Each structure stands twice: as structure tokens, then as C-alpha cells.
Length: 137
Image (cartoon, rainbow, N blue to C red):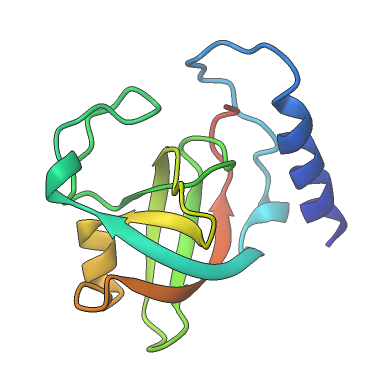
């Protein structure tokens, strides 16, 4: 729990300092974070309309890749997303910022949403667990 609080404090404080837009420096990459629960909430997904557009980390969005958007996690962080309604899980890599609706905690790629069984409803209650922290952003 203490590690999570330190991580959240670090993320919040990092917004107060100027940093380069793109970096390859890793932060706090350790086994301590592997499998750490970070939050539960509503997930949504984005697909056709954004396919091929530039993501916040500079990549082109690929709706068939296992990627996601999160407002605060460092880019390239790997997160296990579990659908709390059916128990299905998928691992995604954070490469974009969002979602921008207050009630949502993560935006998934089409393929990630499909693996979680949420294409029909469009949203799902999920749990997020950090697998590996990525680049500071």
C-alpha cells in the first residue's frame, strides 16, 4: 500500500516539473510493482474513428494491438485489466492519454475490449493491476 501511495505522489508531483515529451528513462521499475492493484472502475474502448491517428506517446493508434489510454500511468506501463462482470483478463500497454470522461478509468483498444467481452455493452467494470511500470511521462 505504501508503494502505491509513493507512486501516486510521484505521478502527481511529476506534473509540476518540466520534462521532455519523449524519454526512454525507466522509473521505479522493480518487482515491487508486479501485480499491484491500482484501481477499479469503468473501462471503455476506442476503435475505427481513431485507427491510424497519432497517440499521445507519438505512435500511431492500432485498434488491433493490445494497448490502452490512461490519464496518469507512465507510457509503456503494462497493466492487467480484469472484467469484473465475467472474470476475463487481458494485458495492455499504456501508449495514450485518456479517457476524458470523469466516470472512466481506462480506454482500451478494440482488440483488448474484445478479449474482455465488452464490445456489445461498450463499457465494463474492471480492475487494474500493474504488471510493469514503463517510461516516466
